[in-house]
Length: 148
Image 1 (cartoon, rainbow, N blue to C red):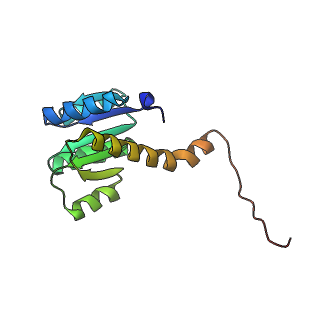
Image 2: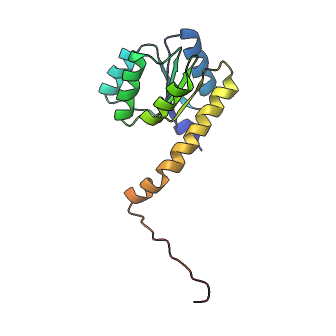
Image 3: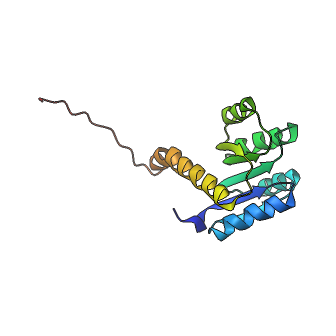
């Protein structure tokens, strides 16, 4: 996986965490953009911006976060949420909504990188058959029968 080709948007109202996560991912070789307000994110997407992954750091997922997440998913943007206060039911609801991953907000760069790598692997695995179909590479599994 060539990290320099993977663009990640880091969103968090908390400047320290946003810059920390952005620097950790940039040092690991990813293309990084950071934004501190949800309005900035909406404006950028309306202007045609897109990313391979959007990393949303937040204290909790309230109405504004849910609206942003809904919009991002509707725009086919893979979303990972790192939050300091989520219940199991809240996490389940977010997975059902279509986010790639939901986990505790961490301040360890190695953990942030591992979360991104794991999500990226899942995105690649999930998209692989569709990418082949887009290129016209269809295949049919053949059955072999013992004794025939």
